Image (cartoon, rainbow, N blue to C red; front, side):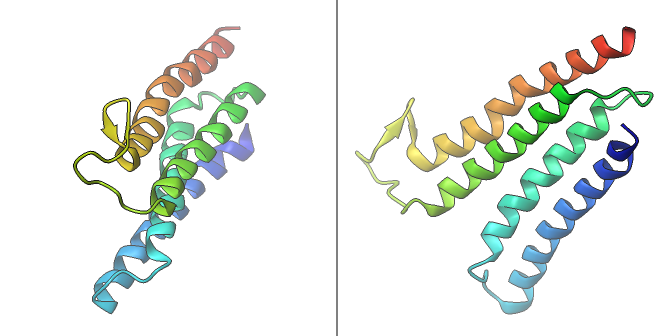
Length: 133
């Protein structure tokens, strides 16, 4: 997992830098350029997964299952942000709801908030189980 030892900080830094570039462009231009929300979506997903990898790695022990879980988590978070960005805003009284929340909010809440809530314990359990072996 030596590659992950160097890749995880890099993924976190690149994701954070992407979010920073989007914010800086918005401040400099006075309004968000069309690409800025997408950069925040991908950068936020990368930074989140980079933090997960930093937290999950221990003493060089790695696993293909952890890598796959984190890759799926990245795709899920980026997709949730992307879908919410791509949907037309319809947050009006009587608009579509998903499990009691407006559609775009529900996608972000469940995809970015709830999915990592279940993925993080799985990653740590797998990491520490492999560590004890």
